[in-house]
Image 1: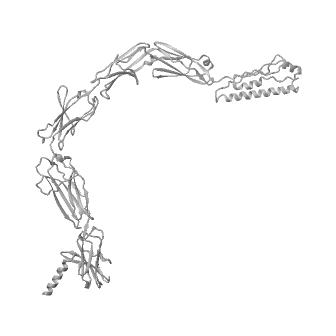
Image 2: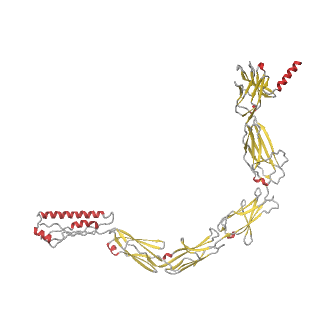
Length: 629
């Protein structure tokens, strides 16, 4: 019995010693190790003994089911080591040369206490404990808002939404937020707002947490945004958060205010489309009834759609009082009727005096007047085309000409209402005898060419044309003028006398002459050659006139070349005659030569040149041949 008591006392003293100290063996481990599920981890273990260890053994134990269970061992000599079978770590655990415990693919169930025990024979035994913490982040929370309409008039709480976050470890925490502010965690179902939490441990060991929010909403919650946040732990004492999507509540609350307004900005004029919008602050939006009261206080029902009353292409008859009434039977003691006044601006059609069309004789005075009536101050102005002629309702033309023929417009505008304007038109026609525009000189290239003559005349009624020459005629109307075009051939008679255009109507007639001229010069070359009659002293002149040479660029080159060739041939002929005479082969003596040289004929050759380009050749021909001594 005494031996038992002594052993028990020694065991109590050993148990009361600091962890890691058993006898003379000191074991050291990390007090806490952290790992993410699925990762690997190494749990270190070291020890110190004062003497030779001998056949020492290092063993790792886990707490399981209220008792210890060995999972791995190793002798200090290394002759024997391994992992125990039949444990939750079998196949995933090993012990290294540094006596550390290596665990691969950590499970959440691996979170527990691990003991490193060293038995050193005579030196005794020692152990130390490390705690392994396993973490795994949960999924993003998903909220499901209530699909029911919650009435603010009810006195009980209703489910607002449910939040779920799956597969987290350790157990995550769900927090509700309203407008980014956390709601106090209330679990009492008697309160106007509380939460109901639950958690489920999945087969994987991870946790799925659920929180349901119940509340008794007010009208102020109609635009509130609710969301849920999951808060979870990670290694190194980190607290992480994931937010859900936000949602709003479908609330039913009575109307307190009604508004009725025009969507159209600014003044309304005839022809515009008008939209009137009626809104109530109740939820859901109530139905609306529209009515209209005209200037004679007659009431008419109007049909709108979803609180919108649309009037297409309004007229002044649409001016009056419009009323909107919200049909919300839950609203008690609230004025649900709103009114607005619509005024449609207008401008009557412009009336012109005298009524058109206006016919006036050339040179007479014309006075045009216009008037209209509108809903506001308006301006008047007369225009012809884009030219402003008068800024009053009166337009005076003191002495009309044919240029005054045309369409005149009286335009009225209301400056205070953009886009509101009216316009009246009148046509003024000036009658009188024809007046032909002065023609310009017409140039032709050569005789026989065709040319088109344009005779433009003003007058009303439209004049009739006659020409002194026949040809192809075409008549066209251009603005206030009538144009007759005649195509003729340039003959000598037309070049000499021209062509006369005559225009006539019931008020008289007018005529103008069209003169035609050749645009090229005439080149005439007269050559007088010495010819011989039966008497040697008789000299007869011979005239040579070539065709007309064109002087215009591009057309005169060929003619000039031909003339030059002819002149060169004549010079060659004169030279041959001169040589024959010197050699005595011509039937004339020296006396005849002298007579020829000193006789009454002063020039053997006479050249007339109308072409400036032939002037140089003419000077050569005018030289006298030398007289034989």
